[in-house]
Image 1 (cartoon, rainbow, N blue to C red):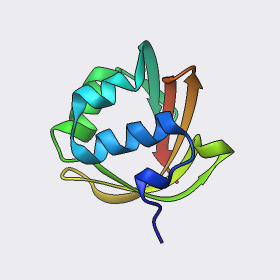
Image 2: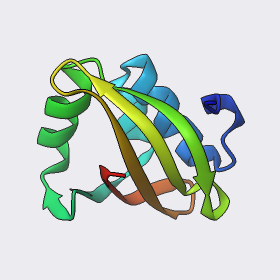
Image 3: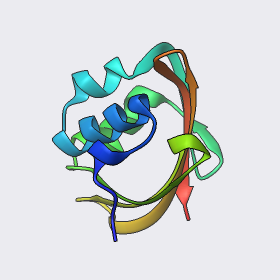
Length: 107
């Protein structure tokens, strides 16, 4: 059973997931600090390049299954036009109202 993005505990992570699911790159970037970093399967990636390749040009969507750590750790079925659906883990480091780092990978 999935968790509606509106019901996620952390407001910044909630905005991140909502932006992904809406395909709204500007709203997504608004959740991040200007110097935000990310990793995929343990390797640091170029954030702008990664989000375009994995989310915004291929209709990425997050169907959140569970949350922990106050809403800053998620398990989600992530779907995009490139890879189809995969079970993924997401961890967020939030500073103030913004995400400074997120890490994702297969769960």
